[in-house]
Image (cartoon, rainbow, N blue to C red; front, side):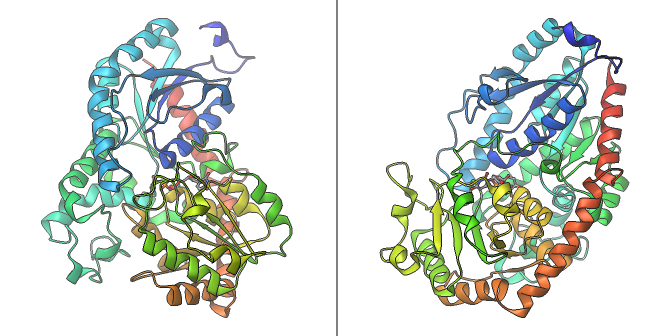
Length: 464
Ligand code: UDX
């Protein structure tokens, strides 16, 4: 295991241990970070749960170590159950992580292990590592603004902003502009306690770590990053958007249907609407129908990801995802639409034919869209998504939020506004500007590159 210790005159090769939270929106940025660190000469060891385990064959240069978390996955795809599952994984780590971590330390020799980078949602992993004297860094996969919201959670509860009350939705949160109550981090009406608990743990994980890694950049969140640096005693590394530095697509849990890229080739630039709600959001079959008929009525060409589990109560595993679509939809949109179960999203967004993205505003999707200059139709579902949508519409002004009940007429109008109206053209042009600004951050000498250099230095300095 020490064979790589001298590395062509570069500093001696060190091991970085990674522990992602086993959900797609968390796995992708962790693997992108792995790619960056591996490119800087670190050997990578990935700890993983059995639930949503990565495929080692797709990462031949990394070592994989299972952690017997003993959880069997969430009870359902309902977000409350997912949050409860995340809490359960953390709990299981307390006992299950110690032995595999100790075994790896023995095997590599302690001096060769630089640090553990764990998802901020895995507080117990930080505690176990501390007991074994392994330095830790926290990766928080959302925006800087959303982490500020985590940290402010107790204050937001004390001041009565939370739990969210329907009568207060439009009230501005003076302490956290530009958020209104409706934009605050929340999961569901009955999940206030579990959400509060989970926020507190993530903040604690960051405080006990030796640094916070954020998948964001100066061009997107300069003020928010400055605020976090002011509040936190640990250094903050704004190294994002990470997919710009590291090959993507190789950490997808579902098989990506690449035929849609060929399908996109037939369309002129910026004409196609890409529709995807990420890996977790789910909707009622009535909302699916309204979505479908709104898309059909808009007349725009579209590529739509209808993933297994998207529709509440239908596992989707029994057949084609497209079977969930309303009768007559295919005939009504023949020749101008494609439905897939899962797409190579970053490549789709990069395709010149794509001119708009109807998204749930998961942070990865939001950042991927921004990087390609694609304006967004925002329909957030839970957690940090409402806050991300607020930034898209109000701060960066590269999209519009679809509010209220999903109804085919308003869906149709919103799609037209994004894809064919003057409004949409303005958002598209601002999206182009924002893309340029972010590309400067990730380009040579840009702030994200500098942050990666600093992160590497920091990791090298952590040892012992
Ligand atoms: C979740 C939360 O929803 C999100 O708000 C939080 O910030 C992270 O965890 P998820 O819902 O999966 O993530 O959304 P998102 O953060 O957008 O991540 C989805 C990832 O899956 C993206 O990297 C996207 O490129 C990828 N994806 C999505 C595909 O590869 N194919 C698809 O068809 C759709």
